[in-house]
Image (cartoon, rainbow over all chains, first blue to last red; front, side, top):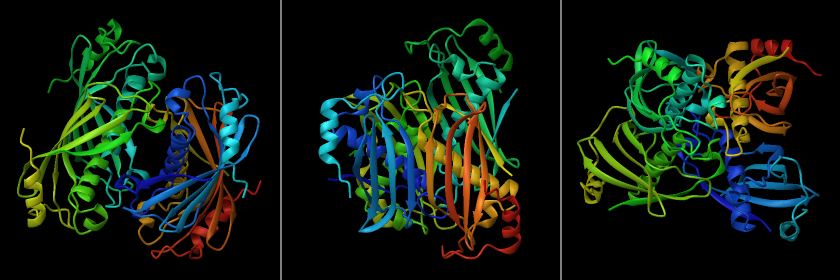
Length: 134
Length: 134
Length: 134
Length: 134
């Protein structure tokens, strides 16, 4: 079950080659995770912090086709695996059916001391219900 | 007496028109203020915070000529007026003698509660010695 | 007649003081202008470029109250004056009725050579109809 | 043989958790590649473009320890493998000997049509001389 975050490519996303500058994609991924926690899971970051956070500990990115000014990007987020404190996410960014990038990340549920803690139960159940192992 | 901060224009600063995207200039101004407090005044932000901060309360910007990838920008900062809690700064960004933008800002010395406080004395004296009212 | 652009304050907009980092506001202003040209005027930047552009030549900013993670900002843009090639805009950013910043800018209609050109007629008429001199 | 790019952590790099916001690390990596091509290889991007470019096609990132305001980061870039048109790079970001993140990327030499082209000979030789397969 994918959560989809939409982003219009703006002037400030693009570089002199007239393509999206790839670090801006990583910001879009961060925004997608933030929207997923707030809008899909009901745990907005402004409520989580400062007692909890979900830092990203690793990420892989594949850039498959360029994006241009004005493109309407859809970034689909799918949880793929949950651990005691970790969560694997997969991302696919498309525009009009064409894949622009894919990504996988691992994030960790941490407490105020930035130490991993087990996912709290209602959130764990909600995440498990959304896992798509494909 | 100007404090000069140098910035090389990178790919990520530029937009599809191949010119520096003007919000990036505002980041460069913020970096210049931060370098001024750390390198010139000996009050780096990592030491100031969280007990004190110098938020910018107003700014004027004039963009006079475009900048391009690879340009070596020099941003000159001059304090122009000090108040009880405020400080006016003027900025001139040049490249090879050509002015790219000028700016004026006002920032305020605040305590942890984000309320203005009088400039502490050694810092006030240091700032006064650098004021260039021209 | 104001054009309103909505922005949710994300993690990446905020600084270690837990407030929106002010250069991010300037990016939001740029996005608001871009949305205005595309959504209100029917001249999206991806169609304007590279034959025309509307670079910002000056801007004034007043930061009146801080914004925090999760805030739902509304940025209202009002055209206030049109010249042969120039356009003055005023901006007011609010959250739940509280003003966070105001700004005024001047932008210029330029051709491919980045020289000012007179506003083309249907666009000039459309802009005039939206001017709010207050 | 590593190429080292130094970055001081600024206010704008950090998030409300007072740590570097990880998409800013990806911008730092992009800047490191740009500095490597300009300063080490003598092929600054402003000369390469628009006839050639080196888009990043994939990247892996491991975030191992957080960075904070004022940290003096050193990002070491090492070429690890060269193909007909591709180049693998490895990155290690440290501060005072502590690793903050590591990354690996693959970039491709492309022509104006954004199609891969074989590395030109003097550049290929220069890159081969710098390869560190460890």
